Length: 166
Image (cartoon, rainbow, N blue to C red):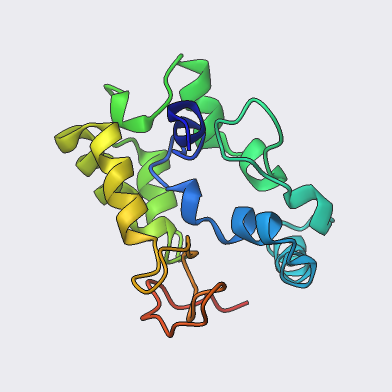
């Protein structure tokens, strides 16, 4: 993966898009999972979302970005300020990122820690940590936030997060 591709996988909010369930389902062509996610998001957001709305190459990608990230207020705020990451912002942590961290979605619940870690180590070192964290220990395949087993080798994983309840 090139440095530019890696940069696209670092969401301004501090999430690592490389392990995003939506992005990885799209890469694997898992239409069934994307349809299930679209159904949940339709209810959560009160607007129709289709599986094809979830195509994504990463939050900062100049190409395709999933509708839930494209419409994200945190992403818009960072881009309006000319920043790539909330960790670069003098207002961080703002109330908006604190609320996002505490919204009940398990993977959102680590953004404050991720932002702090990016500030401590630098974004490049943080990405290397994330790549190790989200690689299957058996075959090195990239796994997603909620994976219970590796999609490539089937190795049983200790899920990083429990799936959110719909």
